[in-house]
Image 1 (cartoon, helix red, strand yellow):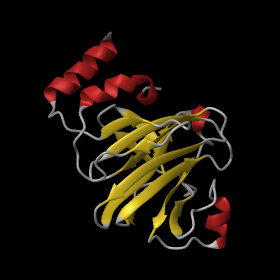
Image 2: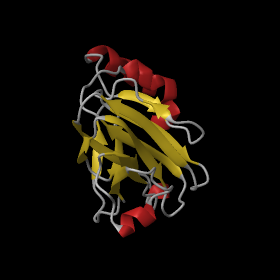
Image 3: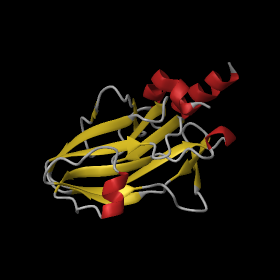
Length: 186
């Protein structure tokens, strides 16, 4: 009850703008309605062999930060999901990046690969949900005009929760985060 009261106080005391929250499922792609918005998408690796896909389409080239993060808890210390932004017009990955991808690239597509292996591992405090996360840190990526995707996978086949943050414009609401509270909470 105390936690619910705190969340309600945060919702009512602040402007109702935040990252657009969402749930990632390995069984179907997440379709981004407005790729300029800021998103915080959460998922769970249940087997460690899943690939999560986010589909976007920009009307012109668009620069945005992207990062992946996991809850800062001992059980997820070794959990380091990776991501790649893939699409036409992106640079060709080198041999190591190509080998790391969880699926073959479509013909004519390039990739920007983030393996999430920086050491020491950065930590950040997310002020809306009041949680600490390990992060890959934000990487500025220029998304191509037209279709692109963000792929998320677990290179070491570890399991557990993760989040993917990307985009620029704050537009979601705090109340939407309550729909998937179990993905935020740990």
